[in-house]
Image 1: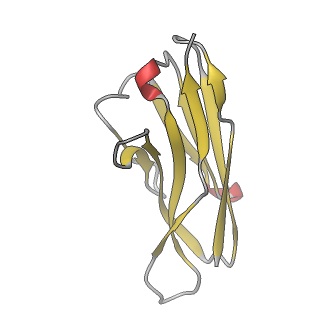
Image 2 (image 1 turned 90 degrees about the vertical axis):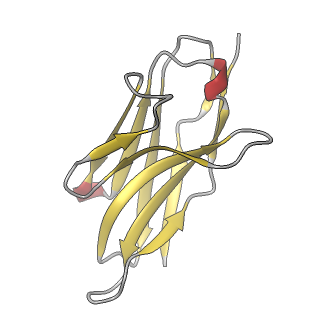
Length: 121
């Protein structure tokens, strides 16, 4: 099994910044893509940003130019730097990792429990 633990959420004013972190641990052979999703009240979970093991990234149009995803493969950690935050960024942010627990097995998606980001004055 693989465990994901997020940190870094909180309350921030519009225009402010936050940095989310997510550390993966457990029976990890390799981690493929990692990403951040978010779910606002009354809305479906949506992809915010994702990064491959090679460093290729993709972002939701709503966060391009404001958010930056990065990862440290040696630490099995993914980060999300969020700048110029807006009230509409308020949501629970979930970490996702597609990981292999053994050579030859297909990758499985794992999820963190989420961290709340609230953007409000």
